Length: 295
View 1: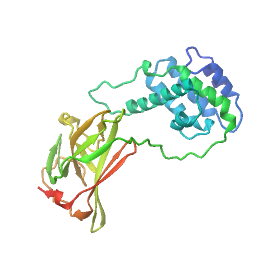
View 2: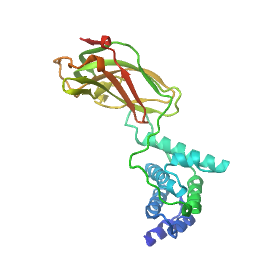
View 3: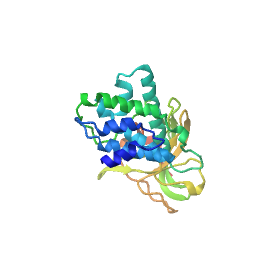
View 4: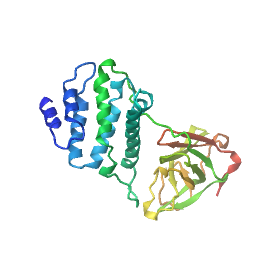
């Protein structure tokens, strides 16, 4: 590890200061710094080679890794709850903005849009170096804290979803290359007050004679080319966008079956639409029996 650290700390065009890496390598206390040193070393290597996506992923990993050194559990808490100077606070906010931007672009499915990162998107190195300096200064003041293994989800508070019409029809529908029996609903998704995109998936639930009935296969009709439709593909709502979109939901997977199957037999008084988002929001909309039509 010492030889590896020496290699990392003497590289040219380092993103992370060699002085900081050297101090971390000699740090003793309540925390094990080995993983952090490896992350910083790999970040320097990839940044020097202009590997933008690897650099972005490593910066995100460092931001998720160091909060306990400042007595906190997440980087969002580091930005919002730690006592920073005004300038340092702006530095930390810019790192959080980059983390959110990188999360979005790294996980965006391939499409016709040229949505990608460039080296210009990588935040100035003095931001992350300043964070690490503070970790060096205060790391001995705290002890490791128990962190939940569940990923932290940040709920977008201003997203709303509602039915745009009260007609929910069971029939054999053609969507893209698929033809299959399903319920058709129309949703209005309002992301107008959010500066970030979100991703939605949906399902129907009800009670039946066996206990619980669930329909968790879906396709959003988005106007894409026929071959681009994918079953159970999350719907992306853009920042500042309000959109009305049909969605088809069934208990069976989308197929190319032109034979209509009977409508499921469940207790219509218990039918609910459930919409969940990647940001952690969940919407449960009761469906009135009179809204459901067969055919």
